[in-house]
Amino acid sequence: MTLPRPASPDGADRAFQVDLRGLVDLLSHHLYSSPRVYLRELLQNAVDALTARHGLEPDAPDGAFGIRLFADGSVVRVEDDGVGLSEADVHTFLATIGRSSKRADGIAEQRGDFIGQFGIGLLSCFLVADEIHVLSRSARTPDAPAVEWRGHGDGSYSVRTLPASARPRPGTTVTLTPRSDTGEWTRPAQVHALGRHFGSLLRHPVTFSDGTAGAAAVSVNPEPAPWARTFPTPGSRSRALAAYGEEVFGFAPLDTIELDLPAVGLKGIACVLPEAVPAGRRHGHRVHVKGMLLSEQADEILPEWAFFVRCVIDAESLRPTASRESLYEDDTLAAVRDALAERLRAWIARAAASDPELLGRFLQAHHLAVKSLAVHDDEILRLLLPWLPFETTDGHTTLDEFARTHRTVLVTSSVEEFRQVAAIASAAGLGVVNGGYTYDRELVHRLPEIRPEASVADLDPATLTAHLDPVDRETELAASAYLALARDALAVFDCDVALRTFHPASAPALLVDSREARHERTRSQLAREQEGGLWGDILGALRQEAPRAQLILNQLNPLVRTAVAIDEPELARTSAEALYGQAALLSRRPLRPAESSLINRSFLDLLAHALRKDS
Image (cartoon, rainbow, N blue to C red; front, side):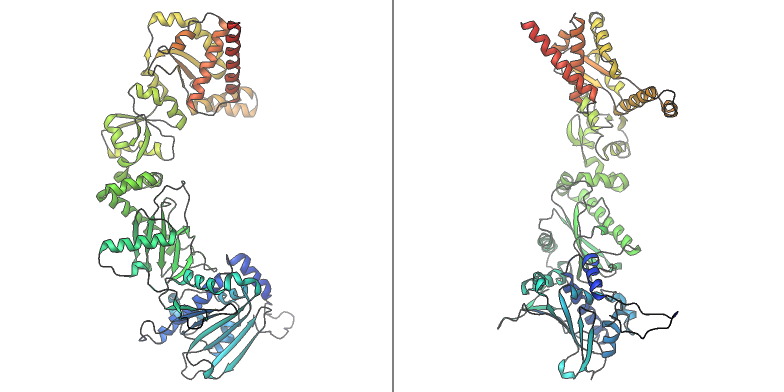
């Protein structure tokens, strides 16, 4: 809403023409998340006016100036005892889009004390009303007259001066006549709820009334934030903080961590979630700036690994974006994020040192978050690695407990590799940790930093097969014909076949094959198919001698002992294929199409053989 300027001659500067309706549409669809922000903007303007009033009258007692909300279904009114506006202020700040009263002479140096720094907040009222009525009287001049400003959705406005009696005390009253389609945001109960939602932590008294005869105004913010109150004992303070966290977030925190960063005027709490959350899922945090709610979804105040807490904070020095619904990413926010992360690390360290029961419950729910932190934080690694649970051949246990039993700790590179070998490695007395989960392999390899006597190594197929007992020479010779047929049948999978004895005897076969070896064989096969071309030359240069897979048959298993005695070549081949397919299924790795086909074919062939035999 700019005052029209005379037509300028060619080549001269001209004023921008603003389509207010288009601007309001822009605000509603792209700047603000919801029409409800109109009340936040009015509250914010009122708080900033009160801040300026206290600057003029620093000796005024606490609570002398306040904010009053009113809604009766026909109007919404926000009244404050702030610094007010003169007629010149009205023309300067209410009639010019983008101009902020925070830039006024005498206030600019106090700008850091204000919530908002943008002059478009009042326009948000056009999201719910077609007319904004402002009645104000300046506190800067004792005998200042009252000034009335009316702005309309079509971009027009009017200003007139009224006698001081029109507003006996300094301050500002903003009155909105809601449109019929905005009752969702302007009915009395909703205005009261929005007032509590946005202003529950404001330092100035805020009241609400709906005009009901005989009903007293109710306080929107009856108590300061719990971290700003005093309590008789530390226990009562902790209980009050936990109760506030439960009220805000809807869950009983596992624990509450008090946050206090005096350098940026930040106070608040972090509530530890009582249950695990998906890895990497970041919860929104509730951020207030100088008491005014800025956002309920501010995930930028904590690092990604801290997804096990939700925070409520109130800060003095964080900068809101233009929409005042998120935080501006700057050096201050980065420093706050680092400092809050340090508070969370300190809480974990304190729990590890003095509260094992709490630490146990925390790790049971959030061990993945702690593992992600321990990878990059040596102090957390030193404190918590022995306590963290891992999947091992001894079940789910801590590394500290596992390393006491196994001097050499072997770690797999994938979940499927662990599942292939777990039962047999356990029977052979080998200590193997599943390193296929996020962070686990890297953390297990750092165990010697905490326990120097422990030895950690990647599980090599040769290590496992070396612990399987060979069969005697006579048994090996008796099975040689079968093993030759089996190797021929499985050559298409680059798989060797061997006969060993191992426990448990219920396991007929073990397929030893790593993901890296399979990838290398696939690449070699592709190189052979592309022989002679440029792509074949490139793959050939990368080709390595890939280790073959190995199907190890268990001589202790009755089924295997029967199979190796088969003297019918086709049946022997089919049985070898079936044993390979069963071992591949037990490995729980994805099957290649050829393997799926082999499993189906061998099953049908064995079924057909059995039916022929019975007939």
